[in-house]
Image 1 (cartoon, rainbow, N blue to C red):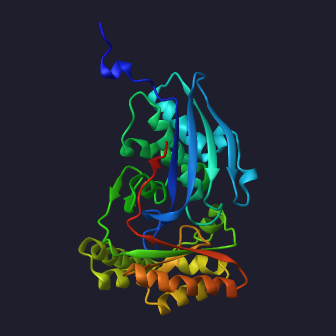
Image 2: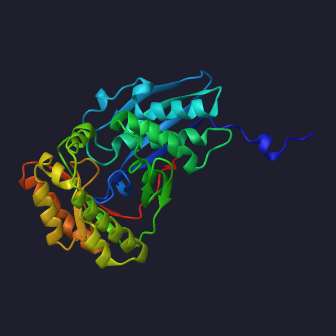
Image 3: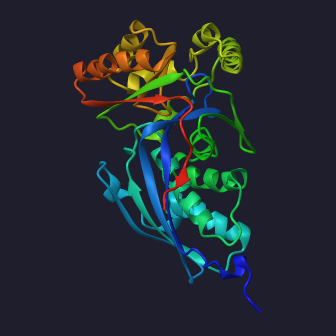
Length: 320
């Protein structure tokens, strides 16, 4: 009896995947909204091993601080995500992981999230029955929590789905994104740890500020759905988080001013910072503004890199 096509296919024991950088919060959607960007990314190589465990075999990269990242799986975002995957599925095999870091640590570009998402996408490719992106989401949340200290999907969700995503603790909702929307994100030679940035938000907020922020969020989401430039521009104003974190980022005020002077629809802090992002109504506008935004950080005494990307950037995928 000849083997069926499925029986004849060899199992895959190794996969390589990437996860893009992301802009968490998008200003008005703290811990709820995020979008992927093209440019910096993390890569994970995952091997299926017989031992029922998760091992971090190596972490490489040309970004500062990579040597300090833990090889202990429980303390590593990628390792913890794969541990959660193994436990949930009751797998009798394990995974060995190598990480290639391309997203600077403490940059506000989702570096900790990208490691666990890239690892999950690669590990999923070597499963006998691969899971959907929605099914991978809870494991990504658990991995990201190692670095952030809480379960929030504003970075892992857009990495898993691409584009702009509304992320709760239970689900990912992809949002409609006009193809003409572009962003600039400028990463200065600074490091701002997520836990320190979150500590700046510990004091209570008055109800009036929540109402104002809710108004901006509603306008922003409606503008996205309608492709309405005016509504996006009116809504992209963060009155809750940005005012408390701005002082932690030398040069922020000047970078934001440079973006707005170059016709940005809005600008704010990317994730926990110190990177700064701005949205534009065309690729041409974004490319024209990027040098001025970078120059503002340089004038403040910090070298910086600027990235131009469509807001509807692609999701994490298997590379080989």
